[in-house]
Amino acid sequence: MCRWRCPPFPAISVAETLSRRQLFPFAALSASYFAHIGFFNPYLPLWLKDLGFSITVIGLLTAVQAATRVLAPYAWGWLSDHTGERVKLLRFCAGAALVCAMGLFAPSSVWWIGAVLLLMFIHTSAMMPMSEAALAHLVSTDQGFDSRRYGRVRLWGSLGFLVTALSAGAWFEHQGMQSFPAWSMGSLLALNLSVWWLPNRKEAVHHDEVRPPVMSVLGQRQVQWFFATVFFHVLSHIGIYVFFSLYLDELGYSKTMIGVMWAVSVSAEIVWFFTQSRWLPAFGLSTWMLICSSAMVLRMVLTTWAADWLWVLLLAQLLHALTFATQHTVCIALLSQHFPGRLRGRGQALYASIGYGVPGVLGALGGGTLSDAWGLSSVYALSILTAVIACACAWLSMRAHRTA
Image 1 (cartoon, rainbow, N blue to C red):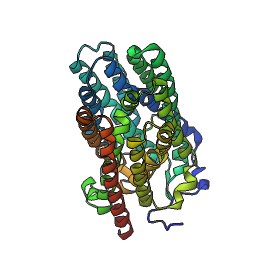
Image 2: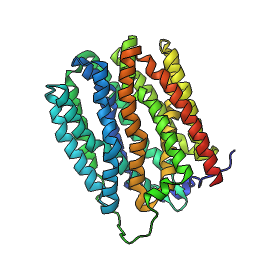
Image 3: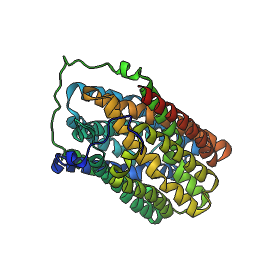
Image 4: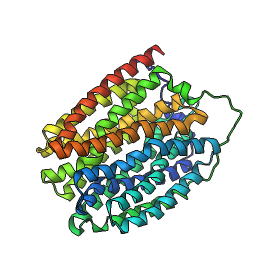
């Protein structure tokens, strides 16, 4: 049993003081948001391929989502921190995304699709950071971040992803990709319904509150290595997020099996989110970051060199419990420590920008170029290297936490 270097997760008895009714709307929001992501992200590349675009163009269009995560989340996070109106902003973003998605029914050119996706993602990319900030506030107590309550809410997002990844895969296998825009509208409509279930509570805003500026927090060595670890860890993951469906399609897997592959990884994260409060106290948060990055190295090795073997690929997908679910919960807990109170929204936004925005752009654009030159497997080969760098950064982060 390792000694904690960060504040321990609170006991269940403390967590039970939170009302379940407060968490139900967040569970519904998580389920509907990731139900949208569960079909949109895996099958957007296949829809674009069905429209006749090259892998380079597909990489460019999928990079639009990551590009909006570079600046948009921080802008929305700053606005939500200064107004306290996170719920109203979530409702606006969901409604705007639904209206923008109508443009997918008329994919006249790559420029048109790029513009539609840009407008959609500007709004959807801000929703999860704002929602996570509100949820982290709700499940945190004086004793720290409650991993049990957070996991029980977040697993509904995984369930939503699982349902649409499987059902959309089976649907597109038999009906073709032409109905992709209709799936987009339906999932965004469900998202709009869920955000209106959230209680419209405005967080208190104290403009005269003394708090450390964001730059002083970013100047801390352990925070710098934390974000460096997140950057390279997620950069390693981009091959899964953007090119995995195309990779499996190239290897001869059916769309139904592609959906199964996504479902296996999400099932693993559901099990982790449900049971994580048992395992997380075994190590410090920074140690878990190192474990997750090490698992990423193994996952990329298996995906690169053994993807023709179904059972090995399934094993690699099971590692998603560590490479995503564990890593994500640990990141949210660390962000709650580093960016407390009125800095919470901007901390979550920086996580989205540094962790998913910049790596997403680099991974999607670079991956498209690599794929055209050396094939899709080259993307995963390079991901092995970035995962190793993430391990090094995680080790340095762990040392910085121990000496802080």
